[in-house]
Image 1: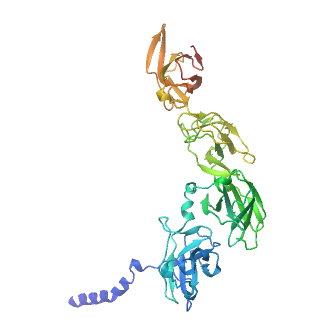
Image 2 (image 1 turned 135 degrees about the horizontal axis):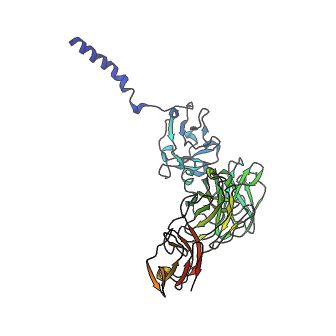
Image 3 (image 1 turned 180 degrees about the horizontal axis):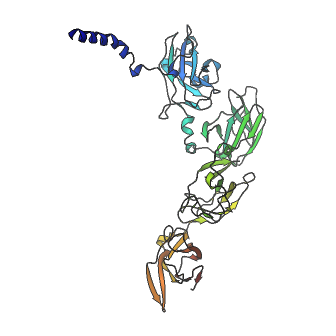
Length: 478
């Protein structure tokens, strides 16, 4: 028995190095494996890039050792993609080419021509300082490109004037934009590099801010390879809207950003000129509350078509040809535009919406007006005390009043029930008190639900109203 224990102990002792060699910390992932051969006299950086990096991208290393941003576009400082993976790129650095006695220890970073400069997971600039020995290699990890953050919040960019968005398939190593016409808004030839890059709906754009001071000017745009002898034909614009274009090796063509959005069923596009704080879509008809109970659904998203920004609502694949629907656009707080369009959810619809109405439009020819600021007026909460006096001849088991206009006067649907009954000149009235200051409202009488309702009257909230309510109509008495 004693001999057996000693044998077990010796066996475990001999196995211990192998067990330690399998520690979790020693696991090497495939992407970390060497992809490039080392070279005598060179420092090899093998760079693990974000998954979204395109194999056609151009990536450069920059730092004090090679002149910083001046290195961008120089083939000497361009990374090479590994042959067997898109996830790793490499570059051989010859210390004899470094300037001003600098080394990699003075800091370096990487720049993607498609997706911007390198960023940390916290969206901060990154500076690496680790370096391999001469003749050796080092793995370096790029956590994220700048566009990886901009793509989530493109609306956070504060643009200066209207914007030229460019899908760059020109093939140029460097892209600049020159403009002539009413003014050289980007300075002399060859113009300026892109203001920045942004990803919207999965499309990467280089963008050029044209300057608020230049709004209204007519310009001829010339995209070129930073004065290197190549340029595309003039593209003419008037700076009264944003423009989306695609560059090819042969020219400049308009680009439709909506073509990149995958919609769920048919879509309602709204050019919103109301100035409202919020926008909702409600439908009724063959199916009531199809897109949710009042005030309906929130927007699916925003897109720009022919320079016009639209708020859009996807109506759902399951709702195609559901039957005739009446569209009501509203602000969720008592202001609405009724029957914007009536259709069977069998096509896309484009409308211009103002605070007073809506018009169906053709996006190919539509030229938007200006945003209508909300009309200032007295606060209904500070108005005089008035009331609706309603003689109820409906025969309904329940009776409620909903009022919309400057606000939902009696609260959200289905509105309010009478606060009391009062007999005047022998007639019993249901009393609905309110405060009014001259604003306009539309009344809907209902049974306290969607089961039975009708549009009653329009009123101006500056007096008491006496009304007879019949089962299908209302009559103003005085």
